[in-house]
Amino acid sequence: MKWAAAKVASPEGSHHRLIGSLELWRRTRVLLIYAALVLLVGEGINVFGDHRFVPAYIVLAALLLAAAAAIYWRQRTHFVELGANGLRLCANFKAVELPYDQLRQSRCQPVQKFFDTPARRDLLSGTLKRFSSRPACIVKVDQGHEQLLGAGQMLGRGTVVDQELIMMVDGADTLDKALQARIRRRPAAASPKSSRPR
Image 1 (cartoon, rainbow, N blue to C red):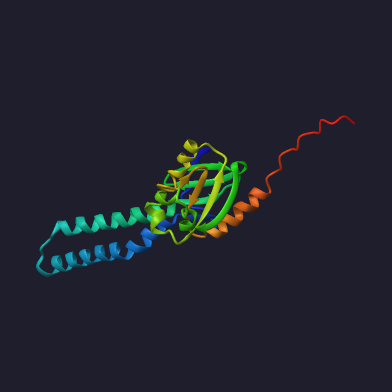
Image 2: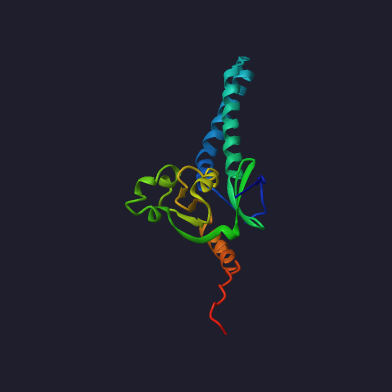
């Protein structure tokens, strides 16, 4: 697993944003920005109407806009992308790269189906549970479980099960197909030479 500086943005279509961060922005952006504008307009009416200035309105509006900016920044900087040498998991100013030669298998399936076994059922929680009906790109990685947990931290709680990494991203099927193509292109292991005498 390689650590690298994360890019804030990538060319359109080359990265897949995390569903949790993306949905949080979609749900809250109108409410936060609208509430901030209402407070600012109300304060403007107060000032021009009877010349009363209420600093609390300005502070509250600034906090709402700051929250909106933070959520927007999060959904823009939390993503998965296909790098030149490996799969990159990016969050804020950090990135973890999983070399392609360590990826053993990729598939796309609903999260609920992945956890639909007695051994895994109790492991479904957090963002994964909230979006359990959505498809995820699930990759088997040839790394130790503890090492893989470091990569899982970039994706959220519960995204590592044994040696499999669960990526809840937009366009999970597209990411899966791209990973499968790279896994298939990996050079085959050399077959052992026969020990039979000629």
